Length: 446
Image (cartoon, rainbow, N blue to C red):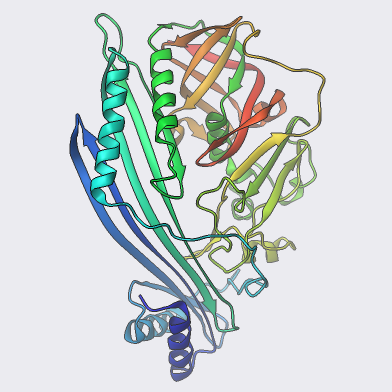
């Protein structure tokens, strides 16, 4: 692949030849290797290189044409620019995207670099060893049906005809272990764990093994739970799953499309308990897949979404920011249409409280570890959800796995019913979050 500077030079000379005055180009390339194993043998080994370049051209009538390509040599780039130029004749005439006003602003000084990839044989050996340890750790664990170890190199760039030129590269590796039990006269139980870091050498394989094992064993002793209203404690991963499922709450594009729980006038309103604060922070030190700019070249940054229960900001692209008289926030993904999406959540306590709750002394509390079927059990436009979950009923330190149950409610009520945000946070692939205590949620047993 040519360097970003070479691509910029090609684009400038070709655009001049074609009479194109205004254009921008966003591209990414991903090299990935992944392995799966089954009972000590390689089950699947995959290697791929995925490249995508999006070219946008504005014509003299200020209409925009968009095309994609994987070929960024001079001929390929010329064809892409020419195709986008021709497509601009049919471009939308309302809410036409434009350059981000911050496309040439300085980005944060974050150290992003590639790590040397491990050999495929090392990936296989490490995963086989992890599977073996998990199988031998407890007699009830019969298989690890879902597992995976992968490493990925990512290169990104953005440039435009007004002199913007950005590039970055990073690497990360991930491990997933999901074990399943078999016991005579008992239902199969399962649990999993995930770890992500910059490279295989930095991956916390031992921690992933320990978590998967402890969770799996804790589900062996299970009982039915009575239906009713419960005080519920969401794990970091479970609460972030809910936050992500209802992200239209602060997504400016969803708000403008009238597919959101918020309106443009919702800023400044109390939507959650004062105990909760929520940020989107692409540059958080724990974010292994940090990005310093978005698809429009806007620098990423820490954005306050909810401050002590008050909705403080929306996530913006350049286009939504212009329509709502705000500033871009670095959350744009460009394509045929510009979309808006979060990067990495950071949940933390808002106002201080004298109350403190502990699972060790709590009575009749349900700890939800993992929410399932979010694709089917969430109505994001109404705010409602009904979701199966993995978790435990906790009573004065006694922890009993729940056989099968669903939790249901309205997300807005959940936010307002938060009674405690624990001070200690947990790092997950999607963000940093403590356990969240919510009062009076409906739980339906089997």
